[in-house]
Amino acid sequence: MVYLYRKISIILLFAGICVGATAQMAAMKEDNKTCLDCHSRQTYTLHNDWTGQDERRLMNPYFVIDTMQYLSGVHNGFSCIDCHSMDYETYPHNNELKFEPMATCLDCHGGDPHYEHFQFELIEEEFQKSIHFQRAGDLFTCNKCHNQHYYRTTARSSSRVADIVASDNAMCLACHSNAAKFSLAGSRDIPVINEVHSWLPNHELHFRSVRCIDCHTAFNDDLMVSHNIQAKEHAVKNCAECHSANSMLRASLYKYENIQSRQDKGFLSVFQTNQAYVIGANQVPAFKFITIGILLMAFAGIIVHVAFRIIHKK
Image 1 (cartoon, rainbow, N blue to C red):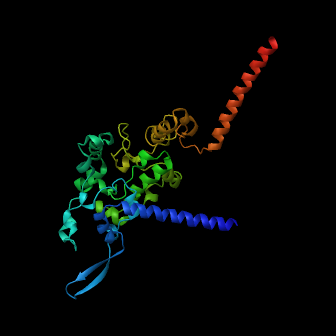
Image 2 (cartoon, one colour):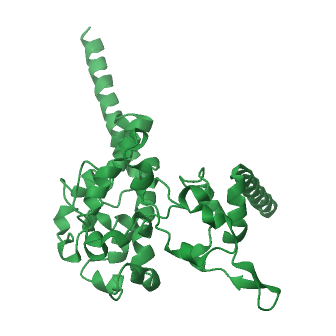
Image 3 (tube, one colour):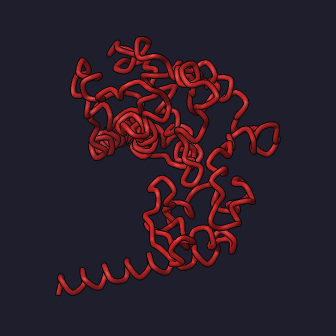
């Protein structure tokens, strides 16, 4: 019986996912469906004028779009030609379109009061101080880290530090653990991440618990995310800078949890759910509630004791 219930649950879950996907596809702009009819597939069809036949070719994996990720990204309401040249409407595409300049964040969001709170201009100023810009210049654009098709504002929309860490580190590792993509930004050989961080105790745990940028950027409290990536020689290597009462993580990574908790549940909930007050501790949430329960019982005992003393005197 348990197996039957489990099987039914899986079927219902799968059906829900399919219904959601169908609804999202229906909401997609009509002209985007034309583009994604090819760019969501592993192959495409091209007419060979020499042989007079239609031939199937493998799509460049960099040009294959994951439709579900695209629909859940922040740019899902745009038409493809809002960012790409209208010349793409002609198929087969002209080879010269390969040299089309990719739009940056400021091309759309710069100087627009609607997006002022995202501080794109300040981000651009910081980025131009970074090691990425110093080594690659204007060739290192926003899309080298932020995939415009899939980008989500995880840091602003999630209260779970683990989600923020995973999302941010995935951006860094997309290049720094991929030799092909790393070579797009320069001619240097890709460093082996584990070897570079061999000095760091239990580096795998650190990779899961903190963001790369928490150690590799110059801290700026005016921005949600610092974009001034430092050279590896300037990376944080002092344990006390994170594992201390006045940790820099409390003002960078953990501030997201503080902000979200206060917005959603009120200031007092930060004491119950925030892990920032002891950086690096392996906390068990149940212990926090047990501790709060013991404190409440202690206060209740004191109140009862005082009440009995008053009654006894009378």
